[in-house]
Length: 327
Image 1 (tube, rainbow, N blue to C red):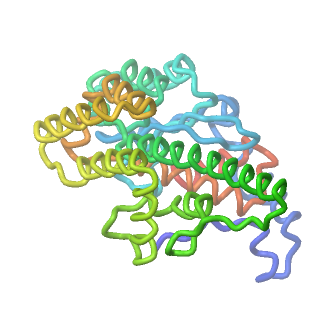
Image 2: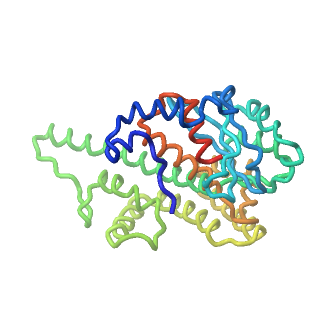
């Protein structure tokens, strides 16, 4: 069973010690931090070539104050000790090349598969440093684009409904009447309907509760374009969930493109263009059904550790502890 990393401050209540003082002693004497062989360049990069495996994940995360780092991990180790391959300051492809090229070329050429998001810089890094590896664009980032397009439409309708309600209130006030908004059979006003539909639009219809089913019927009757957008998003989700063969998925995606063109929604046309740009990388998902969940999980571990430490006072020491835990 995996547990959260222990910090010096968490030991205060158990052992009745001064956590801050113990933290200083741990850093300077007990940890071996001052003798760390990567201390001289830790602020720019960390590299652990021995952790390279046939399946890697690459992504970006913010350590502190929004500073982004490129992180490469070994997917086969699922976030356990030995999974960390590289931590590189910034997300520029050129910076990553200089670091990852330090790994022996023979070892880099043995990497078979790398999962990544839709970032162009990550694609450049993989193409340059791991030329023989198949790039697999994460399915969840693709699905999120579609979900965002649906939510963008819902939000636009909601602002229109709020403005409509404000106009009706002003009109009633000028006429000296009491404003009474129209209410649907489930008790929602139009603006409430759109606000309360947020979560059901993220879910598949079979996961809707009875109240969400009723709300969706009202919503889609009022906004048929929103129903079409939701159907496009859901059908895309089903392509990833049900298709098992690459060629079958290719055919399903071609049909999905046709539906997008028929619908004529700008947001979905942008998604279709993104598909075209990353088409082969997206289809590579069906080889091993690999996702970039390993990179996202590792990012969550770093954020949890940072939260336990109540922030990062010394970035190099934080990276040292990350290396000790995961490299």
